[in-house]
Length: 301
Image (cartoon, rainbow, N blue to C red; front, side):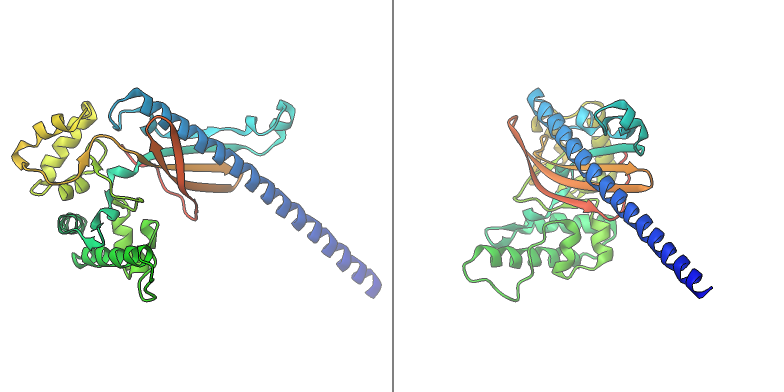
């Protein structure tokens, strides 16, 4: 009986190890397939943005790039022949593109190694609008100034914070997680200073960017841009004459976008996000690419 029990135990262990190896191999295969599909989806998004630039129109939420891709089955494309594809796991792809310049660019806070007073006021107004402590704006500005100065000068300051690349990394500047979470839908970190796109900006961002603007006026501008996007700043300024002179850095075109992709294979989900820069009508450059731990719902336009 002891020998039989021992043999049964060894057999069960071998079966479990074989099953585990199959599961690991299956998960790795799904991961590789998902990575390739999401890479192709990113290339397709870049093509859409490139074709949009060729139109010469202003960047607005009425353009094709702003239409989210609903979850669509792509399992039939995962094998060369249909017989193999039908036996594979079901795969569903979804995604969307957001205009990075619809948000306030925190890089604007620092100019020539100093904090820009007007830009700091803009961030303070934004913090007030979303219920974040106003002191957070100054701490972000000073932290970015110290980080940028440390990276540009020959003698680096060991006490200076690391220069954040994404909004989540603002915690490196000593900003609490709750404030970072509240700011995330409204701010962005881009490689250099950029204007806010008035065709895609939210009410909170417009209210912060244009001194003296109230939420109801911002809502009116958003409704106007949704019906007929502003073609240039002349047409926009005609709608906001009561707030003149406008000192904010505004525009109707954007060069930076965030591409969100999500792939579901069986019970496994892979989500990725990429910041891309559009160089006229010629090329699209991927500035950073990250895999998301959690899933983000598509924004309601």
